[in-house]
Length: 121
Image (tube, rainbow, N blue to C red):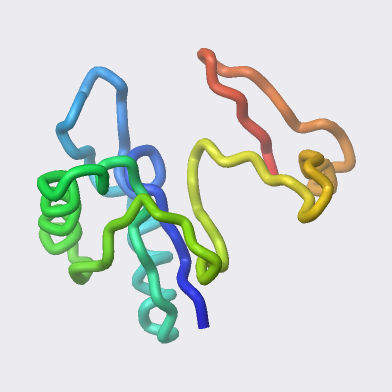
């Protein structure tokens, strides 16, 4: 059946580099999306660098409970069962080509914003 990965910082919770290890406020659209997936019987895991330590996993799981979500698996391991990754930093690549996706608008959608590379795909 597979699982859906959702990044934490900048995707599920707001994030500013100056906040360090402090967890941000929930981003309502993604909280609702996770609830929708769970209601449909989908498996959702939080995919974050915070999973590097047991204290990071615990902090994220407590945050989930405090914001109306169940205690989901928290990981930084991508396996072959992951069906999708929702992440603010990911760039979509056409499978088996190594080439970035331009299909969304038919043009190269890359842009630089404060040192980050973004697409509108």
